Amino acid sequence: MGLTLHTSNERETELLGRCLSGFLEPGDVVVLSGDLGAGKTHFVKGVAEGLGVPESVTSPTFNILLVHPGRLTLYHLDLYRLERAEQLEDIDFWGTLEAGGVSFIEWGDRFPEALPDDHLDIVIDREDVERRRFDVAASGERSAGLAVDWVRTCGQQEVPE
Ligand code: ADP
Ligand code: MG
Image 1 (spheres, rainbow, N blue to C red):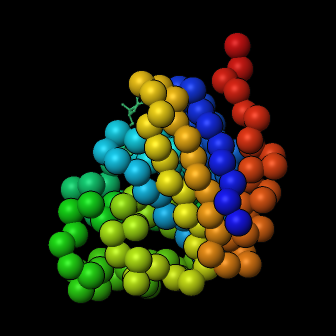
Image 2 (image 1 turned 135 degrees about the horizontal axis):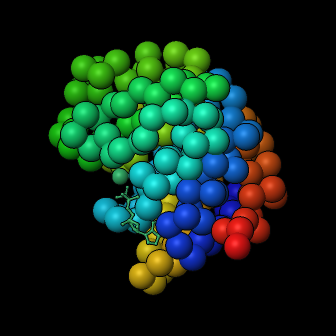
Image 3 (image 1 turned 90 degrees about the horizontal axis):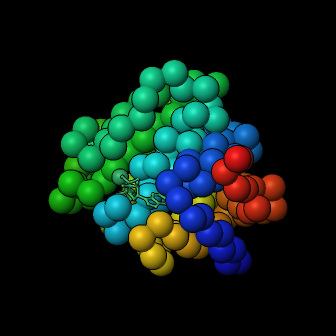
């Protein structure tokens, strides 16, 4: 199943994430792929906003994992700097994913073997300076439901005037 969404600026990407947050359930895993500057972190900023996370969300590139308590706990991971899959154990990767919060994993596609069977894949492509394409693919029953709810409800989001 493949679904596609577009945004025209940074705020629209945040709103797309904020809108997704309304459908999240404990244990959900979302993998974000795309080049540096694609908009993965901005998307997660919007998710955090929707989950009522009070602090500001920054890139976890140097920390690998940042934990943000909210309506659901947001586990924000960035695997860019990991060199080997074994290092995932150091951050208790699997324990984190199963801790009852929601996990957003930037560069999760670097370690495909490590991902749980059921997760949502979002690939962000830079089509222009500000235009982004989001290719959404689900790998299991739960993420398929999440994808459909999200795209159906949030696909036409625009930044309010
Ligand atoms: P990544 O985490 O994928 O490396 P970031 O979210 O940190 O990307 O950065 C995205 C950059 O692209 C920011 O500088 C942001 O202002 C810019 N940008 C421009 N248009 C968009 C858009 N439509 N969505 C997200 N970011 C955008
Ligand atoms: Mg990032």
